[in-house]
Image 1 (tube, rainbow, N blue to C red):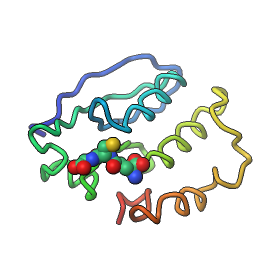
Image 2 (image 1 turned 120 degrees about the vertical axis):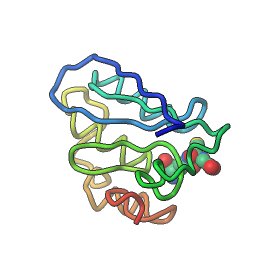
Image 3 (image 1 turned 30 degrees about the horizontal axis):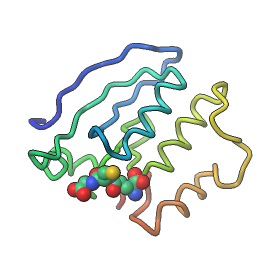
Length: 126
Ligand SMILES: N[C@@H](CCC(=O)N[C@@H](CS)C(=O)NCC(=O)O)C(=O)O
């Protein structure tokens, strides 16, 4: 992927690995903070808006909406910040980022939160 520069942070507390696509000074910061907060092991890929990296074919294959953030996990790709934050909170329950028994934390809750602004978050917005 031409527009993306990978760099890896190794702060692993768990086995979970994921890739996060981001652009500085955007809403992708929230996902970044959450990943750091829980001590996740993840790889970041910079999407450069100056070169329209969000509309490159490689990135559109990950997120057809052409927006950041996206989080690639071993369970699928998440493309909406609320879904990404909920996923992180659920994957790292010991971090206590969110009340996990709240209805909005269910998978159906992700869909309701995300559908008005796009498609289903677990299917790259499709
Ligand atoms: N509903 C998405 C919004 C994502 C979004 O709009 N991201 C902006 C940056 S904050 C973006 O990627 N814009 C790219 C563009 O407009 O071409 C979410 O909550 O994650």
